[in-house]
Image (tube, rainbow, N blue to C red; front, side, top):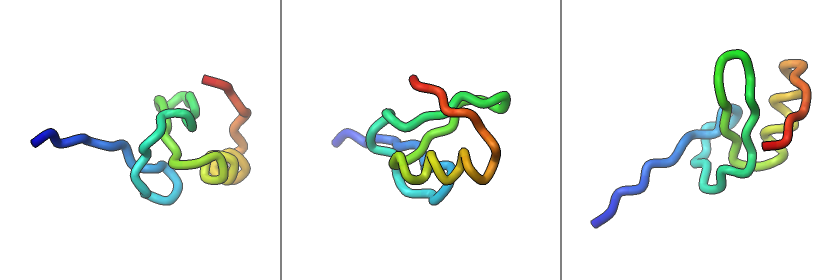
Length: 52
């Protein structure tokens, strides 16, 4: 049996299945479960959009 480890969404804590929604910050790479969580995080924290 293979155990797959997932990152947790920085905003809501859900499993991050796709690595498509990330944000590079001065504190490191942040993972998000969807574009909505990534956008809300950026609005709340004044982050600029980056495409990875």
